[in-house]
Image 1: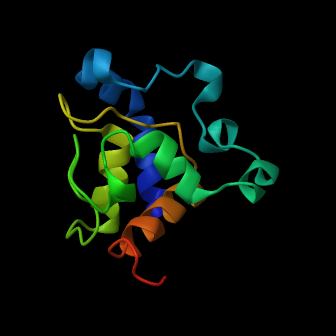
Image 2 (image 1 turned 90 degrees about the vertical axis):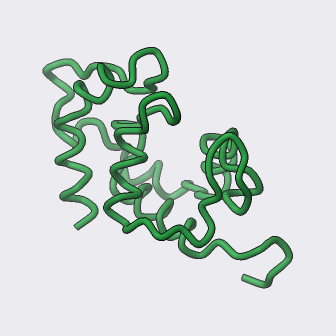
Length: 127
C-alpha cells in the first residue's frame, strides 16, 4: 500500500514543488526521471541505510528529540496519523510548515521511517 502511495505521489511531485514554493526540497523531474525505479537508490545503497541517522540529519532539524518532542515541527511519537497520511506529508510537505521530500526517499526508506516513528518511545525507555 505504501509503495502505491509513493508512486502516486511521485507523479504529483511537480505540483507539490509549485505549491511549496521556496520551502520545497522537491525539484522538477526531467522526462527521463519520471519512473520510481530510475529515481530510487540501488539495493546496495539500501544495505547501509540507517533510519536513525537519516531521521537525525533530515527530520531532526524540526522534530526534536528524534521525534519524541515538539520543536519547530510537531512531536511524532504517538501520532494518530495513518501510514498513508505520514507518507503524503513526507512526500508533499505542508505549505509554510514542512518542505516536500518527494523523490528523496524510496519505498523501503519510507517504510523504515514510518516504522521508526511508530516505534518511538520516551527517551531512556528500553527498545
